[in-house]
Length: 77
Image (tube, rainbow, N blue to C red):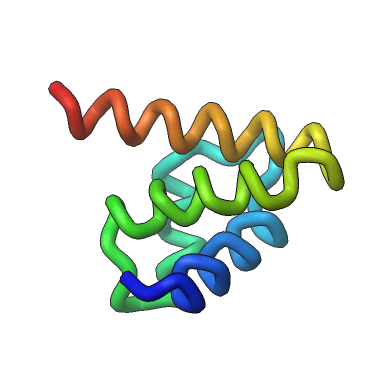
């Protein structure tokens, strides 16, 4: 995945993520805007967005962190 694609997905995630959203819901919502993105691409974009935007919205950053870590943990198993 190219850097501009990752940034676009990350920006979408920042707009979409809410405290009550499950990872499955977030992936489904992200794929509406980025239909060719894999689950792994979305998790990577979540980390990217988390790093780039952590100081702007702490609540969304925490939600993205939980999502990204959860997805990475599942992939490792």
